[in-house]
Length: 148
Image (cartoon, rainbow, N blue to C red; front, side, top):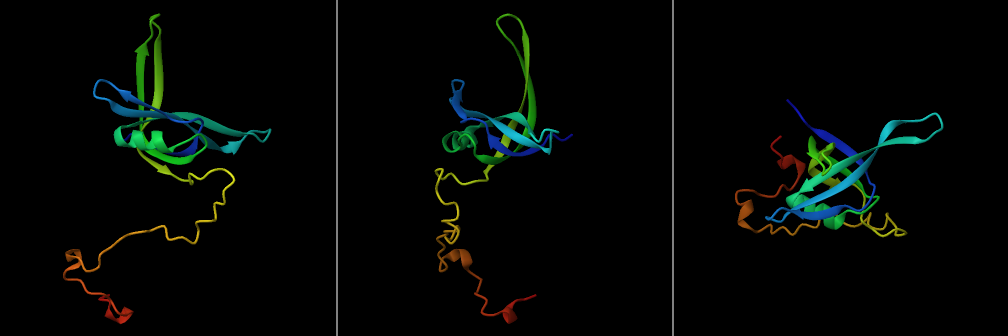
């Protein structure tokens, strides 16, 4: 059996970060607006509004970094649960429990230039080429040195 969902959409409002139970486990909830692949006859775009739940470290990252309108990709599984309210009415909810959330747009203030960082090196790794991690390896001087 397989229960896997992948969604791309925008947050409809700021996420809500809470701490569940006595163990203070972080949990963040937000709603994702996901456009359908068609428009109505009047030209309006149809969207589904899907509740998303994240737990633990992912919950903290989402709760502290996401805002209304951000474009994200969510990967996870569908979960349904029920509860009875004080009046004895049963309620059902279907939501996506996210395993992974990717931020697809930048977190820059509105009005800033999204092209400003294009020339910057996005991979700022500090690699020590003299470290023991590279023992047994030697640099390739030209393509003629490649073994394939």
